[in-house]
Length: 339
Ligand SMILES: [Zn+2]
Image 1 (cartoon, protein in one colour):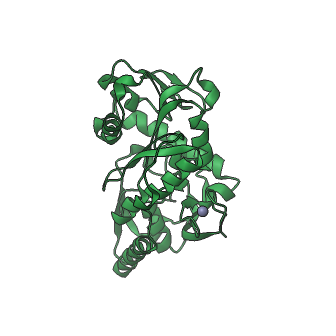
Image 2 (cartoon, protein in one colour; image 1 turned 120 degrees about the horizontal axis):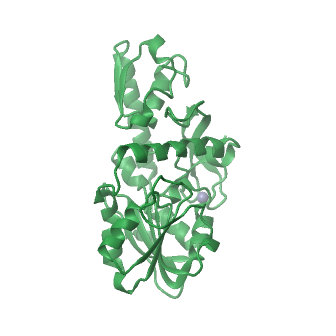
Image 3 (spheres, protein in one colour; image 1 turned 135 degrees about the vertical axis):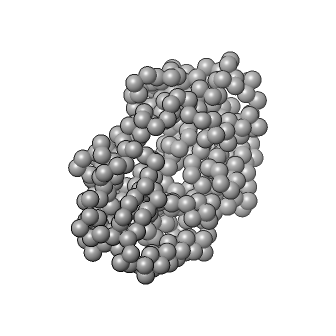
């Protein structure tokens, strides 16, 4: 079963599925919600999205419990501020493309604990910073409004809206982008940062995860911005880095030409899926030797469910398939599979 493309309403084609997928493998979430996870691609515009997030009435409840685990991870693993490395591509991109001295007010939607805003203000102390994030952390490190985003939360339009690793979590991203435009001054700026899907596919990074609803290429992200009434000022599309776009409310400006933007090619997608399939066959050939997984992520779950005779409900101890699973997140210990 497939969905209709949320961008252009055309038919979509299913590309990656995990039946009864556990939407968390964290101790803090019990019982673990399971959904039929399905990634689809629009046959007309090429947009890749999680069909299950649009179709399954239980999606919102399942994903809310997964987000609860994010908080616990942030609190236990990373002291504030997190190392600057994760924030450098966007910080440098802003400084290259904007005259930051002329900006006064910056809002980050989905700011978490505020690490990015902290670093931005450290470099530019004149900026008035404001975060918006419904999650409440024990101590706010920057000023944060703890509510789900709505344009009415801000008393007046701002110069820069930052949206880092937010848009890929949202359904109907062009509608959300249009709402963010309402908070901007007419000559304001919007910075978007999302995972770079074509680059991740090429680098064989684990791409499809239950908390990501939208999977952008430079081309499909630019198309969403245009549909929401922005023009695309600049795109950062470098191997190994997230995809960043700076756009501005549409006026008479010229934007980045569409034919210069990379998209996910059918060949790249097929190659990725083929490689994952081949690895699965290689692993199967090694059975009944015991397996060890480095990383308790989505692909590990996908592999285990395909190797187990109990499918999506593997019983690791009884089956003796898996000797160990390593993961640097302490919150992932113990659950998710029937161990
Ligand atoms: Zn489409």
